[in-house]
Length: 398
Ligand code: LLP
Image (tube, rainbow, N blue to C red; front, side, top):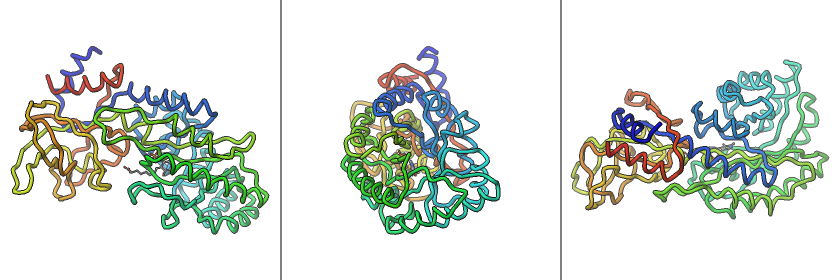
């Protein structure tokens, strides 16, 4: 479709809405798979980051498997054409129903997070006369230097089997005849921007592997989880550093002959392709701040309220002069803001703002609080990352 028509179409749409650029997604996937293939690594997309069918279709076309955290995600992955042999299932609270469903589907592996879960899977698999493939998710106690709500691999976190309990768990596993041990799983957190964190993870995993082998287990599969962060401070979309990321594992991890190394990226795959377009309703002069009140809120994008995160904001109707604003939504909560201070071209009622890099954990975490309407989404398919900027500028110009 010609860009001019696209612009007309979107400028008439009622805000707020998510706008996904599928070609940005393809560019990111090309880069991710280029580097993972170079090292022979297998990728499972973490569907929790964004489960939109239009995106999953493309992700599946690129040959990624699916990392799921609920029975519904497993079903959705299968519906979307992901082969069950490419589906892994993590989560600290798998219900009996979800375990049965995944056993029926014949998924590749359960990433098991406790000794008790292991017993339950063994029992349910026995009842169904099946063998469950299991990987043990071990909590390696590594500090990911990220927001505490998205740290998952420190000893105080609820995730994974504590290292101190690994020996006991493995001993029990030997007695569970309906389980096949296929390896180890790790995931230490999200939005990790320091490569040294992944290096430390590898060093811990090297020790844990030795320990597990000493207990008489082969480890055909190692799943190193997701976590690669993106640069949210940058208005211009940058390609995540997949080369640097995978190189750390290639250099540091003691890979065994014939072993398959898996990863579960979510954010790094889909963050860049999504933008939230919102309209300015009011500009309020409060004693402390000038508030821009927009028609999107924490119901459409909860990350700033939940993790004090920032997403680049662009005034698509930008005037020349600039001033500082707080940008907030319409929801009846004081945490409903996108930023407390940003320098923007002077804002007026009716201006459109683009909130960028929101493809991951954006729409998928939206809610109907305050009985808001479900947020809409549109897709475009244009040539390059740069054109994506032109497109959103075009929406404003029309
Ligand atoms: N694997 C497992 C087992 C996970 O729990 C997660 C994310 C991932 C992979 C993918 O991690 P990623 O590559 O996306 O960092 N809602 C939060 C993020 C929660 C992440 C939870 N686990 C946010 O908006 O920042």
